[in-house]
Length: 390
Image (cartoon, rainbow, N blue to C red; front, side, top):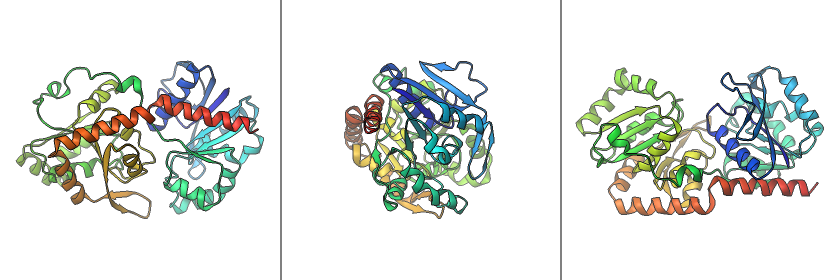
C-alpha cells in the first residue's frame, strides 16, 4: 500500500502522537508498504527519510480556531494531487487535519480519521468546529478511536457515525523485552532498597505533577522516593525548592524522610526508570489514551492514575493498575481526589504481593494484546478492509 500519515509533528520532535505515528509508520515500512508522513518542518530535521519512512514537511502551524500560519495551501495541494491508497489524519484540532477537512471529497484514496479524544469538545471557541465534525466524520471511510467509551466515541455515537473501529495504543517490545541497564537508584545516590515511585511526563501544568507531589507526601509509603522524569521538570524543581506555595510539601516530605527528585533523562534512561520503579503514579488532568500506562504495563510496573482519558478502561483491559475518581471541570479536565489517591497509594504500597500480581497481570496483557507490533497489524488490517470496500 501507499500510505500517507498526516500529523502535526514528527521526528525529531518528541511527544505521544509522534511516537504513535513513528511506531506505526516504521513497522508498516518493514512490512513492505510505502509510507509518507506529511508534517510540519523542524529545524533539526536534516534527513527526509528516517528508518525508511519518507517525510514531506511544510512550514505550517496552528489550527482552524487559533488560525493557521504558513504554507497551508502547499499542504492541501499535496493532499489533492497525491497518489496514495490511504490517507490517515492523526488528531483533530491541529492544522494537518483541520486544513484537510473541507477538501475531503477531492482527496484521492481512502480517508481515515484518528480523532485522539476531542480535547476541546467542551470549549465554546470550538463550537462551530464540532457542529461540522459529524459531517466530516461521515465523509471519512473510517474513524479509528483508542477507546470504547471516551468522549470522542460518545460524540460519534450520538451523531450516528457508524464507520468506526477501536484500536488502542501500545508499547514497544524492542524497548521493554530487555532488562534495565544498571541500577537507577544507585546512580542517583539513593539506597537501592528504597521504594521508587515514578511519574513520566513533560511539565505542562496538566500532567498531574503537583497532584502527584500532594498524593506522595500524604501517603503512608515510608521513606519512598518520588522521581519526576520529563521535559521541563527542572523548572518544576526550581518552583518546588523556592516557591512559598510548596513549603508545606517540602517540610512534610523532609519530616517523613521522603525524597522528591527531578530529571530530564534521554529515552533509554527513561525506559530504564520505568523498569525499575515500584509503582507508576499518573494523576494527569488531560489525556486521550495515555501511552505511558501501556509502557508501565510492559515494564511490569503497576500504575495508579486519574480517570483522565480512558485510563480506567486500560486498567480494566489489562488488570495492570488502578484509577482514582475525581471531578471533571467545565473544560473537561480531570482533578483527582488527592485524599482518596493518597490512601490508595499507601494501601497498595504496603502489599508487595499485590504489586507483583498486578505488575504481572499488566505485563501479560501487554504481551498478548498491546505491543506495537500487534497494534500496527490491527491498523494494517483496518486499512486493507477500507481499501477492499472501495
